[in-house]
Length: 161
Image (tube, rainbow, N blue to C red; front, side):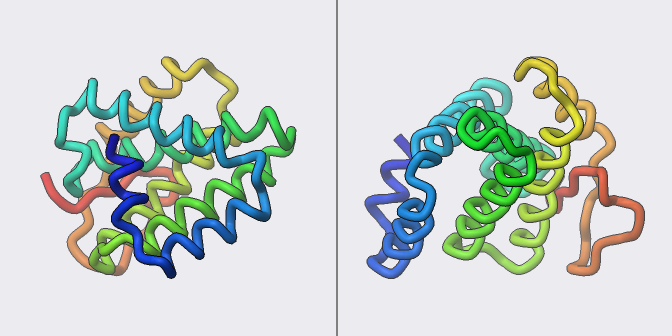
């Protein structure tokens, strides 16, 4: 499984950073893990390996991942803002530990926040959320520089076609 492979390849410093985060919120470990696995499964089914590139499929994956983390952790905290902060923190840590170029990292962080925003605004089934995020893919904005254009706060962004 890709998640376990990533964990096995982590350096001690990275493992320590992740462990520190989960020690503070141990009840979020399994929901976050389940959200991650579910996201990869859905994206593999819908987009094969395309979601590992920096295209619209990757934007979809990041938004869905954050939505699912929020949804699964909400049952524990009962607070939209607490789970949004958790999702932002844990996926931000992922970006910090991943070897990504600056623009790709900025793109991922932006798309993460879109998923958190969808969670805050929509209380639909996961299938309906998937369709909603897919609609957002159609209106996604292609980035060509590190400075984000104005008016894209609610839109997914991507780098490659």
